[in-house]
Length: 140
Picture 1 (tube, helix red, strand yellow):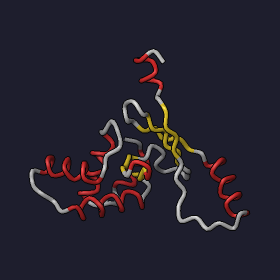
Picture 2 (tube, helix red, strand yellow; picture 1 turned 45 degrees about the vertical axis):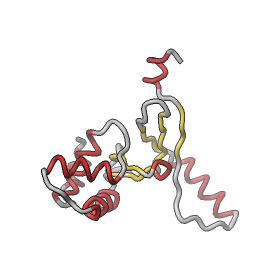
Picture 3 (cartoon, helix red, strand yellow; picture 1 turned 120 degrees about the vertical axis):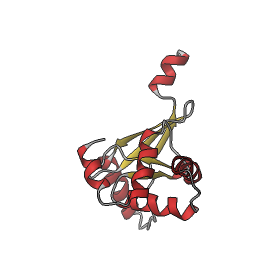
Picture 4 (cartoon, rainbow, N blue to C red; picture 1 turned 90 degrees about the horizontal axis):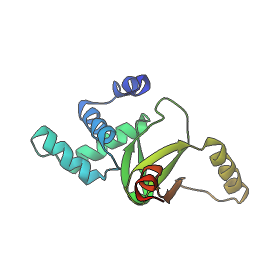
């Protein structure tokens, strides 16, 4: 855990901290229901779905998690404490997601959108392909 993540975790509640830990240890993005199941397993008791959604909202608000819209799933932010515009590289073989900062490119996209007089409700950037690990394993 980075110092920035540790500092931001102090601002959220105990359940959100557990949800962050689940996201941080996951190999791939998790849906809200996968997180709910893992949280219930860890705590040994049931929780309503609203528990996860409130926790995810808190984590997103403080910059510790992102929603990967195209997957309808969530990941821990790897750039916590930095102003950034995330790009998600989604491996079609293993399902892992890597985050990169594309602030410069995103600024250009925003400028183009503004020139077109288009009012976006949100920006989501992702690229699908095969990660280096899967390419090495599969000889591709």
